Image (cartoon, rainbow, N blue to C red; front, side):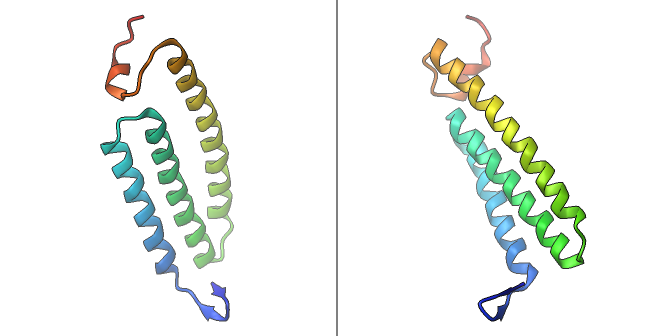
Length: 106
């Protein structure tokens, strides 16, 4: 990829994708706030999309970009449904920890 007159290798994009994925995974494993967990999952999905687009560009094939577009569509729907569930849970209960959501009693 040519940016600003210099050539960027695909390994830089793959390294960035790996760093973003690890940050998202650490966020899911360490944090207890459900909203932060959803954001971390979105970060992991975007890292996977960056990998798909990088390989699609490297191989001169549009299939990876189309799959990334489909993945972004599904991620947007997942975010809407997840946030709606969280808003409903926060209105009915005063919950700030995921462990408190493990009990489905009213």
